[in-house]
Length: 434
Image 1 (cartoon, rainbow, N blue to C red):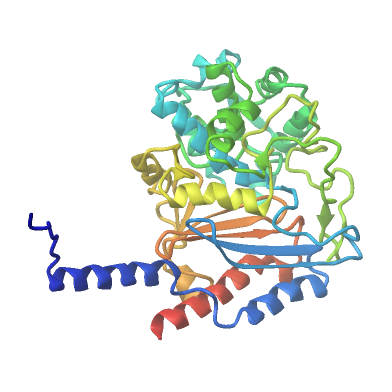
Image 2 (image 1 turned 45 degrees about the vertical axis):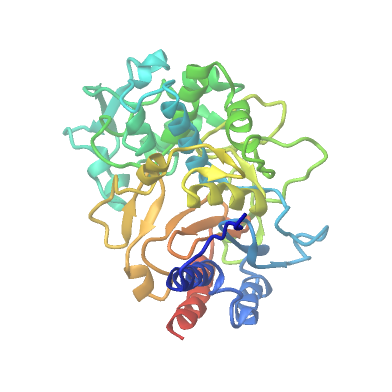
């Protein structure tokens, strides 16, 4: 018997090897950074100069390999331990993309639809009113500044639009935070003290007493829209947002370090402020995004805020970001279809902004970021109320997380994310050029 032989043409073999090497270079060739000590020193400076109580930065490749990490902690303010990738952080608005992804998963399963009226799940909103100036001017159209302070008192008129799930995702529903600059709206929302509601139903009852800032669908106006979106998910499924995240996101994708509430064995970091141009612990009520109080993260408090209420470690949140980077799949589990992830970073709102555009609450940068030396075009970015930031680089296939806990930054500290990200990309560009 003549033995069977499989012959590969030499030209095909060379093409395969060249392609494989090219893929390896694309995935890993830019790391490690040539001068990581320069990034370390920059991060350290924000802590040593008293601008932040700590800063932790982590870059992960698409398969979870740590490409860079460094943390710096001021032991005067946080004496217990160094903050690292396993420390629990209040991520605030970085919760939004998690909730939106969860709702898109429910849409894929046919449980929800983008065109569903919100009142289908929250009938308490059927009689919501819309606030305008006394001469009928749209509040959402008034630019930030003194003009808003002079817009009160307001007139309440009937809502003439159908609020949909898509409006909630795109911040077009008309909900807002207690920091709009319209004193008459801010004080009304602060009076409701929304984070102290005992559960979803009570929160909805409180918010139903407030007017919208616009007719749904009119414009992008940032607010608690994603929190209402989470309540829609709860009522559509009969499950809490806490359990939905666990059952659909963290358990099947093996993500540890992303959840609602923690028990007494874990201590959250203090809240800090730079409002007086100096670093100190924040005063009660100083973080006034909801008014007098903020979420308490008590494991016994059955209120889960999909726009603001999650906790995460840098490690856990980077895992979630890698799911988006890998177009909906992580650790062998397909969570979202590739077309759905494409919708998340596709242009949806703020399309005339020179700095980029908004996807589904995911900011995609323009070339202005590269021109300014802050990063690159096409990054998917976001952040949170207490100094957290993330970005996804789909071109180079890595994710970045910058963690701290700080509000009311001084001017020197406000540019932190741009400078750290910019320093990283300066080295990446140099390596690509060479």
